[in-house]
Image (cartoon, rainbow, N blue to C red; front, side, top):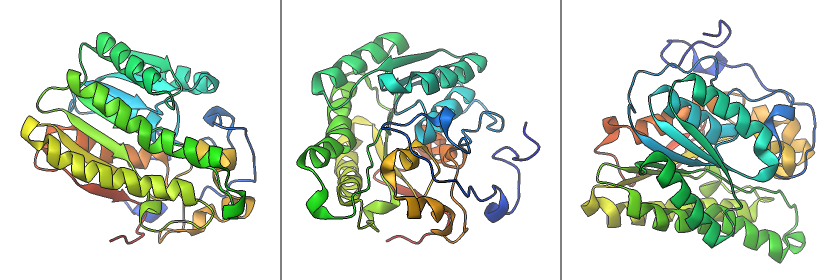
Length: 301
């Protein structure tokens, strides 16, 4: 266990649990590689302590190579679940690291490289994951596209369409395909954002997708309740991840990234993972259609 950052059960002041990131301005082409960031985000590799809450479960996590998705995948593995992560070809370096951590947890891990803007590829990856896992009872739709554009006149049709395909259409396609493999008791967790409530003016497309996935999840939770399948949302605030260094925010916003919330520091992916574990576990059996905001004190509706 890290002496600098205690595990998730250690009592302490949340404001000072992590230091301010204070990142230097840096740029990577999309989708960004976490291993090359300064500083490298904390996924909980040295701190997350499992207690068997997901023993024997079967999890599929999109965007599981870095950031929040990777932290959730690691936490699931430490809790006893077998895990399949989905990533882009360019993210193979990060995916290999996450698989190493999963393997060290003595569970089975597998990575699938896929472009989820292709509906047929979404259906194929679900079939591949279900075959490897022997079914799916945890589905996390976390992969996302975020590129800041200051003027709406400069927001291209292609970017607007691809952002919706990645953030909304892909979860829809993946959920539809996964339901055939999901038993009663299964859990679907979609990743929204604070932007669903407080859209940044230079992230019109991204914010709109996060509002859409929030709304879609609440309707789907009602539809799937008779099948015993829960649907919930995690809506993070500012969290240090590869989205920021691959044009997700402007240079000015990157320099002020720690100043957005009441804690006056960015969140780390390791701090978001326990929310996914709770919503995946049987402890949240009476929770469906909920949005769990994890944002360092930024009040939302």
